[in-house]
Length: 203
Image 1: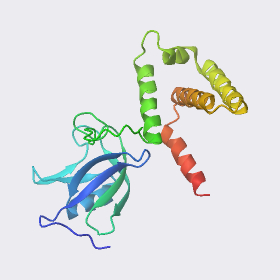
Image 2: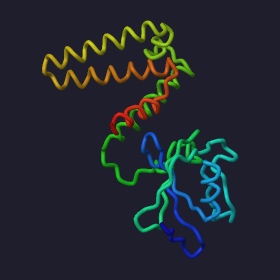
Image 3: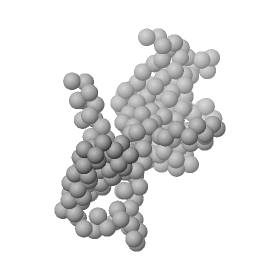
């Protein structure tokens, strides 16, 4: 497909987290930036203010590994599916799109919500807080965590047998939480599970 560059030889490029689906940022590319991105496998953009290429993360370390590039139907916008090593925004936010102009009250997408919860759990492990139940589980170790996962799974079954959607919702939430604690404790990335589910979806 032939791309449509603007008068300055640029095209907007939207970076999206390949695993969570979260839109991370919007930047610009020229033909050289696109070529270097394809060659290096990491996002390279064009800075209009500096008038030169910039390798995302060259100073911050927050690079973006590119796993896919697509053009929209008109060929005038690019979508980069990336796996970031850190926040996309210079403010430290995961996404540049964190200023909500319209509060619609909707919950974050499921994957984003699980990712955010995992980040809290990882922070508790790295920075223990007195009285934290999460830290209590980590202190007790894998046997205690596995026991809790088993208990919560049993309570999910009981809630389902009781035909109570409210109870079931609560118990499934507990099970999700304890599974995330187990995954963090065992060093299993959430993205690996997402990829496993995606592979099963294709079957």
